Length: 274
Image 1: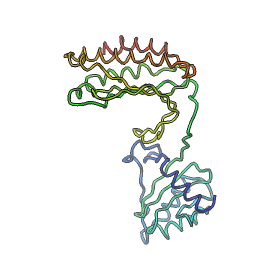
Image 2: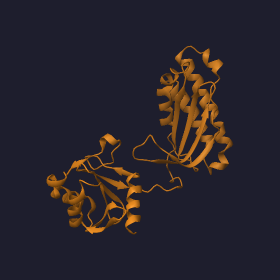
Image 3: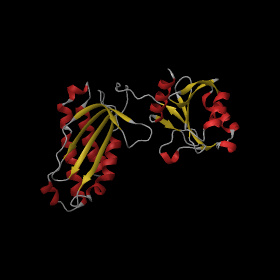
Image 4: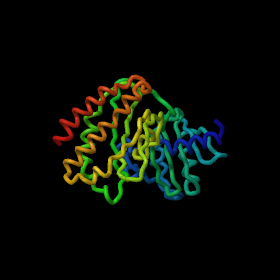
């Protein structure tokens, strides 16, 4: 890569990297990211930067990314010197020769380290991977805002009970409960890659089945006890899984019948008794 390509590569990987915490593990939030101080100008601590680069990369040469016109392969000692010379003027990036590790230095004299991960546009579901089921009940109005709190524990138990390998193409199944009368439910769709804003480390979910369910609001209004509300919602969700049976052939061997059977057992043993 020439200088411009290398700098663009760094900029792209900066936003798709996982940054590390103080234990050298993947940080699970921005607040967990470990920032180390190295200073700028007369306060620049070259020994700290040199040790950090040596420990983190292990390569003799590294890619130093400063600007589109000045990004290149240099020795680690030259990288430390260059960082000390210009850090107060620019943010600087480092990538190792195998393009798997990344460091970022700010003009304020602090830096962080991370792992570059590849996120392909598509992938096959790994053999034996359990299905991750997620129920969402975030769409509410004044009349239904208490329902998510009533059913949350039961839905979480149901998600755990359905964490099994059902074969086929699907890695995740998202079922949304829509609790606004004038909303329009989504029909089932299967997506090969979906943005995953809820995770700081996994930027995408793969092979996702997704649809939504809307209750009968007149019936819901007549339910007073928490037990009756839970029973109705869970029955509604169970009935909705018939769509998976109808779409089974398109899911390349997904065992929808077994999934429904497990769902029913979970409702009886985990949900209604929970």
